[in-house]
Image 1 (cartoon, rainbow, N blue to C red):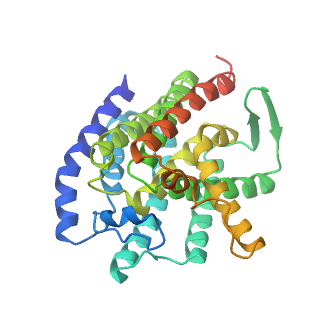
Image 2: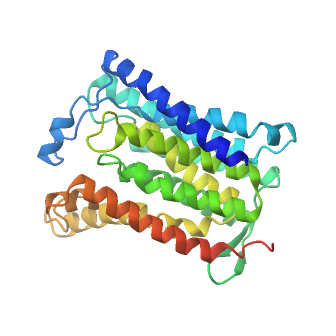
Length: 328
């Protein structure tokens, strides 16, 4: 089965790439700048190499090109479009990381710059998938087995909102060692199971590649992290999470399989709104949620295990909700 090959290739390439990339990032002094207003104990991570997401991006690309070559020759580019979509977000993240390293600060691209670039990527991907016949404006509602048919113009707005929101939610989740990696592996396995169930072999290839690349990256990213994925990696992961959901035509499943991403974003929004409404008071000790839990005593390992475990359970539940999306 090609998805097994895809997993093995991605895992192997990422594992080997880590041995080369991490020393290279050290030599280039590509160290992470830690937020001054973050948990004080995070300052010990100052200088840990960032942009490590390059290793699993390279690995997933290699797996898609090898295990997915048969589909490419047959004219099926669905999996390639998903990868390229995520790659564009990875490039945006790379620019952001580069700016941070260049100015030796935790601030990279401005919020408007990132938003406009991400919005453009979302619109191009949606139009491309529609023209290639990989996308419909029919929103399948998990568990209910019904479809909401939208006008294309409204669907485009919906898709852009979901894509940009998802990408930034995954980015926000990448705040402690291994967290975004551990949460996204179950999501990748969910997409693998769904695409296999639907018989979409080309999407099993890219889903397995995502799972394989992240599993190898976790060797270096688990606490204490030897490397961070940076915005290069987290924005790419966000692109993969929403790209696969749209390619499988089940975008409404994102809030369920990605509930941790959603909660992280909501905690940040609540903190900002509450702070402004109360003129300086804080709802959480610190936002997003994982930092609040850190401050009240949760270790990074505990956060990793619980957040990843919750996501795994939710992904199993989500599979039951979408398994009847297409007749077998």
